[in-house]
Length: 513
Ligand code: NAD
Image 1 (cartoon, helix red, strand yellow):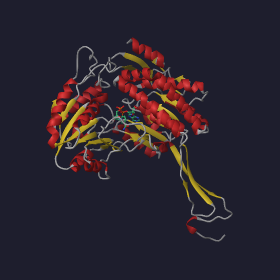
Image 2 (cartoon, protein in one colour):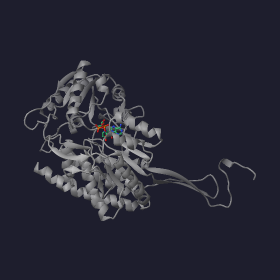
Image 3 (cartoon, helix red, strand yellow):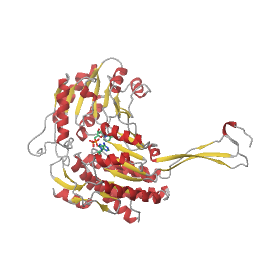
Image 4 (spheres, protein in one colour):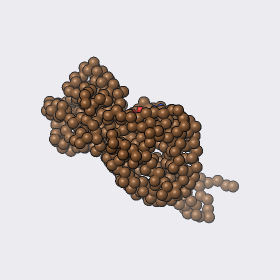
């Protein structure tokens, strides 16, 4: 508890935290609408937050609009320099912020540190990008003409984020948006507002040191109601929303109705295929971390294991030896792999899915219990479950945000496994373990995995920031982070310049005047 008090002091978390920040100014403490935040780790009250009102929201958007007018005039490499400084602050606060992520969300400390490292990595990436916001130059078909394209900043980017990556997802969006000349308004998950407040406090130091205006980086604490205001608001040309498919369908429809741009990062139902040619030692490492890491609460968590019939019994036996010994406990403790679920609702969802899958004919092989006794008083610690199931079961088709791994047997060719892997509505992450080139290339072919991420001999979770991240179908189609994902944060303009004394028309059109 003492450690947490120290972290709160370091990161600016108060007993009663304001509902919004436009940079230096914090506001919205006066309203009566507050939320208490308890840690899933030990059930302790961490702090309270005030929830923003629609009036607070208006204040934030108006400030952001004004800031955009200034920020878009700052040269991109200079914007990159601000991001560089933020990356350096994150290096300085990495340990404290990593611990707060772990304590507020429940992921193990190593993963909390990893999340902050991802923030640092995207800052570095964005700094380089700030000198590389390239467009193409094209050859005009008309004599004495030049044609090129350029990318301009877009405006206010609305960022709606989920509880499970409470800070990294914001930084993926906000740091790219910042170098692109956009300002952002971040609405974090109402389950994890304190890590967001901490990020904003760290950011404030950079804003003060550089004399930056209010409104470039904004934070607004609220629930789905504030998220819905953002989705419907045509002053926000881009909404980047991360969360459940249910949320994404609502946000996507609201943004679409006003012809805005939506970047949707939604649920996954990720599978690993183990063929008869898999190196089982490395495969099992990937399977176990993918299925139980973050207590099964990653969008890329491994939920389905599609195993060739010839190795099925061996895999089952080996997993049955590993699962009962998984180190479950306080995620801030040493050598723990599995922390708690985020709250009791998640525990209810976990148990309901296990009941439903058994009613459909699945077999629970191990796990599923809620842990009790000393250290587990919160009722949020569960034993990861292994279940034998069919891909067609309704429960298997859905994303249960908890540590359940479905074992699914396939026979014959790898194409049968790929068909099972693709046979769900979600399309985020996928992986194959095989040393057979024909099998791995079939998996990566145009008729192979239909996911946004397809890996060979590594698992489904743990993406690097250098690649574009996202998925297809019910996962929403958005891409963020690396590669050319930055383009969604900018508007593209094609410019044709006539430096001749004539006015030839395109396609050779002639007319007399
Ligand atoms: P959630 O959908 O409950 O909430 C996510 C965010 O959306 C929160 O900030 C919430 O307040 C907001 N929200 C909810 N309803 C809204 C509405 N109608 N209008 C506007 N905003 C609304 O999700 P969660 O439980 O926080 O997170 C878990 C889900 O997120 C899982 O499905 C997981 O797969 C997904 N996720 C996806 C990715 C990805 O990159 N694809 C990353 C992380 C999490």
